[in-house]
Length: 292
Image (cartoon, rainbow, N blue to C red; front, side, top):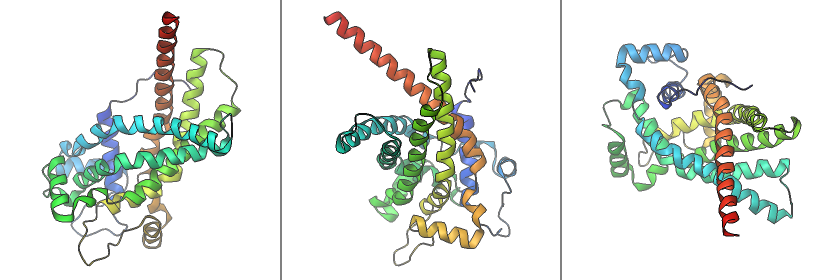
């Protein structure tokens, strides 16, 4: 399962992210005069034809700024929560159930970091807002001015569910796969094991959280109007609304490009994290050795 192919640059993965976000935002019923996308390729073709290729990268600043703190928080929180739960339940070693609980808690922690960035990204990527905002800062200023400071955390509940489900599936699967596959005897073997475990974890996590991702996009793209209850307001009722009006398939809009990004991405993420932590441990041991 190892691959010599280098991961695609961020710009490519962001373009895929833009495509599935645009698909998630559209409702099931085509609106006359408005582009309706029948899939990722159709989405890309219509965006490039009608809006220009540069539109594929609108809102790229927010996810770039979000990426480093998001990834750092994911693994740091997972380590901290893991120690907390092991101490709480008197466990010396991590178990399957604890790994799921730890991942869910890390996901909840991570969600608080990403919500404002996600809101900015989604509002910039929606076609209806093309002339409404001039960039990331403009989204922040207008959102706070028109809807209040707390509006930057619109969609927090659905984002919590999205990250809880993904991280629970991701870290839970990593633990289970590592238990099932033969232990690695070499550094290369460890890398292959991490790619396998992380890719399966990323795939399962994406299967679990895509419906929440769909409704999160719609909730965060809804402008709050005083006195009116938004159509998409809370996560689970919004899931039921999409299911009733558009069918089960609508809850998995954009799933293919998302799983193609987050499946292998989960493997790469685990390999990078493991490698960096091994390097830090080696540096620490060398420093302690010199002190002795």
